[in-house]
Structure formats: C-alpha cells, structure tokens
Amino acid sequence: MFYRENGQFKTTYRADQQIFPIAQDRWAVLLIIAAAFLVVPMLASDYMFRAILIPFLIMALAALGVNILVGYCGQISLGSGAFMAVGAYAAFNFFVRVPGMPLLVALVLGGVCSAAFGILFGLPSLRVKGLYLSVATLAAQFFSDWMFLRIKWLTNDSPSGSVSISGMQLFGFPIESPTSKYLLCLGILVVLALLAKNLVRSAIGREWMAIRDMDVAAAVIGIRPMYAKLTAFAVSSFIVGIAGALWGFVYLGSWEPAAFSVDLSFRLLFMVIIGGMGSIMGCFFGAGFIVILPIALNQFLPVLGGLLGIDISTAGIAHAELIIFGGLIVWFLIVEPHGLAKLWSIGKQKLRLWPFPH
Image 1: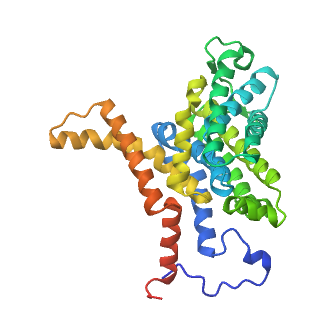
Image 2: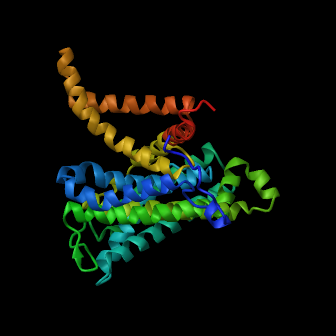
Image 3: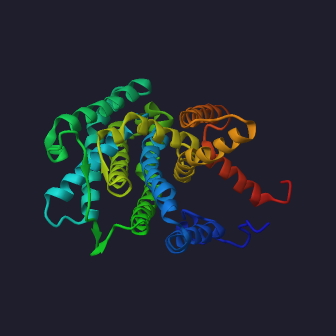
C-alpha cells in the first residue's frame, strides 16, 4: 500500500529517466548505502568482515563485470578468473616496483592491464560465438596459469608464483584492520556499480543489448559489432581486474596463481545465472547467495546430521555444496532464467498493485 508512485509527477525527461524513478526506491537505496557505511562498521565483528562482508563485496564487483559481458552483451566467458589474476598481479607489480605508488592508482592500473588482456582474448568474439567463444575465453585461463608460473618477473622472481602485500595505505590512512578493508571495498563497489548502471543505460549499453539479442539485425541498423563486443570485453575485464586486485590485496593478502583457477570463473558465472543475467541488482543477489550458502551449509548440515544420527564429514558438506549449486543452477535455468533479480522485480510489481487485484 505504501509502495505507490501516486503524486510523483515527472515534468522533465531528466526526471523520467532516473535510475530509480520511484521515490521509495531512491530513499531505500540511500538508506542501505548509509547503513553500509555507518552502521555496519559499528556492529559487525571481525569474523563477519573477513568471512562474509569483504568476500561478498569483492565477488559482487566481479559478478558486475561478468554480467556486463555475459548478461548485457551476450558473450559467454569462462576466463573471468584469468582476468582477475591479471588485475591482481599487474596491481602487485605496480605497487611493489614503483616507489610511492598510491594504492588506488595501482588498483586502477591493474584494471587497465586486465582490460587490455580481455580485449586480446575478446578478438575471437568477432568471428565465433556461443560454445566456441566460451572455449576461446577458457584458453585465457590456461594461458594466465602458465604465464604466472613460468614468467618469474611477473611474480617478483618468486619460484612458486606466490606473492604477498603489506603496508597498504589510502590517503595516509593504513588499510590493515578489517573495518578499513571493508570500507575500501565498499567505496569502490558503490562507485563502479553506479558507473556501470549509467553505462548500460547509455548508447553503448543499448548497443550491447542489441548485439546480445540479434547481432545480425544490430549490424543492419548500423551498430558496429566489433566496437560493441570489444568495448564490452574491455569494460568487463576492467571491473573484473579491479575485483581481482582487491581479492588479492584485501581478502587474501598473499596468493598464488591457483587462487584464480577455473573454479573461480565458474563460480562467477554461477553468480550471474542465479542472480539474474542483464541485471545490476542480480550481481548482489548472486554474490550474496554464493558467499552465504557455504557458510550456512557448514552450520546447518552438522546440526541436521546430529538430529538424524548421521555423522556428516567436512568432505560430505563440500559435496553437498556442489550438489546444491548444480541443482539450483538447473532450477533457475528452467523455472526462472532471469534469476533472483526477476523474482525481486515481480515482487515489487505486486506491491505496486497490492491490495487491489488489478
């Protein structure tokens, strides 16, 4: 009853094209962002920061980049883990080798290197698509694994490819506590999510969606497929690269190439499928689901086993996690291909009519 737009008149095109045209949505988003910046740091524990909040923010950022490529442009990619690895190692080299390199600049330069890497492996998208394109992007995963294990300069001459980061600062403030790391990830996510939301609503975003729906028809009406596909790869890889840099710098602290394996690429794709392809909001739903589900299973399955008199091992919990992931992906593909974001949208539409039947 309170979710109405009665009396909210639009008198300009600018007002009619807002990201959140309904005032209730705008206030809700502002309150959520304010609570995330002000309330959560005061209430959350160190375990909450390290195990849930920081991984959720970084995974949501990575899913945002994957969704631009897969959901908005329709280019299937299985090399997201490689793009994250390139962003992490590039940012590491800039941060370690350049004296006085600011942290934010190193993160952005890591994203730029990842964008260049994404454009390189996005070139096959000009000739192939579908399954063939996914195999071509999968090659980026194996190439990055070989590159960071064999080219020692990229890992600061580490024989195993393992590197570590310390002494991070932002504007003179140390980034060491879980709260400071959380605020850094949150600030970057808010800025890039806002930029991505505006980008998909712009002319280039409409070109991506036209290529996704029917690339031949898009070319007929004057859209350049090469420009649209490569820009989608560049923007997606840039965001994923920054997420990879945050994953290494903030969440892991020290990492090796195995931290960005093909399993991570599949998890990012699962986030997009479960959250909702072609939806910025779906990135947050998918990331929250993938991050929280393993923790919930680790807490719930032993209790369930105790009630049933069954001893469930850690390996059994890991297998149950994979089974549930697979079942949910199949369920979403069959029942609701647009994911949790579509269910959220349907619920909002119901609220706009409730309690009236029409």
